[in-house]
Image (cartoon, rainbow, N blue to C red; front, side, top):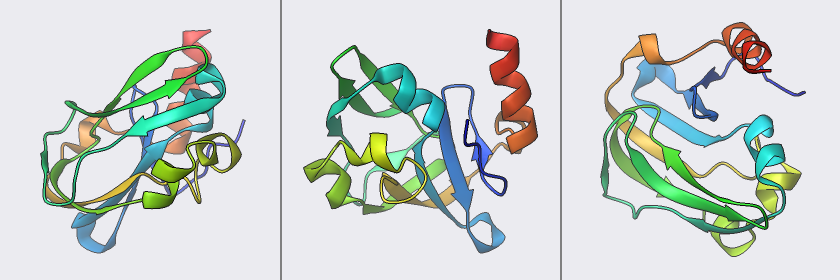
Length: 129
């Protein structure tokens, strides 16, 4: 399973790429999450300017199998939304760590303890099975 180093991960299977000084964060869902969901058919995301709270829901991913909430890995204000993934939700299945990023957040606060490194996320997944 692809779990890129350099990203941080949540127990809810979101990934986050923290920018310089952790002031900007790009967010998406992991390969594990998209495989568990199956073929993604719809994504609902917040609007630019919306405020997110770490560990609270910010959107929904629907697939042929299930509907799953998305959880904010950091707190802050949405600065960009990936329109391509809204128009073509299947990008999540094709490229979860690249073209299927979901949004960018201007970080207002961050609890590093809730985020896992790639190695910690691998161990977390192993413990789940």
